[in-house]
Image 1: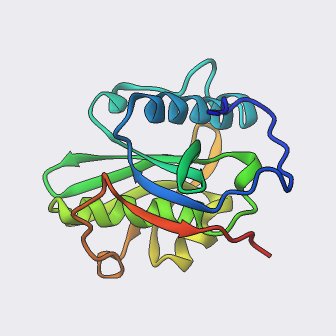
Image 2: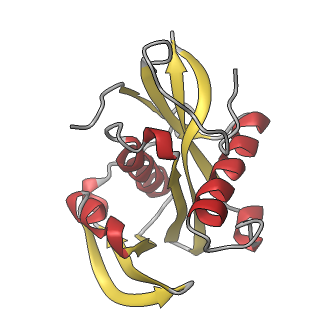
Length: 186
C-alpha cells in the first residue's frame, strides 16, 4: 500500500515501520509521492505556496526520500529534501519536509540532512547552504550547521545556514542510502 501524503494517517499497532530507508529517489513512485508530501506540507499545512511548491530548481535537483519500511519493504514516503549545485562546488538544500504523522519518530529529518550533505560532499561540494525556517534552527545547530544571517523568505523568519562539511563524510552510494532503525522520539 502506498499512501497519499495528503491522507490522514493514524498509526496504531497494525502499522509500525520496522525501519526507515533514506536515499536518493530511483523510482517514479518515490518522486511522485515526495512531491505530494511537499505540497501537503508547504501548500496545505503551512500555506507558503498556492497549489504547488515546484519551481525551476526541481528540473535539475536531486530528490531524496525517507521511506518507511515494513518487513524490509518500502511502504510510503515519509520525508523528503532536494539538493542542487548552484555553482561549481556550492550546493544548496531545500524543501525539507517530514509527514506530520512521522514527526515524532526520531531521526527522519536529521537523516535526510545527513545524506543530503554527505552525498553532495562526495560530488565535490566545498560549501553547503540552506535557508532554514527559524523553528528548525536548533535541529540544524545540533547537526553542526552555522547561521550566516537571519532573513525573511515567503513572509517567514529564516536563517541562511552553512553545514560544517567535516561533520559529513562523503557518501558515494546515495541511491542505496542507509537504513535508520525505527525509534519513536521521547
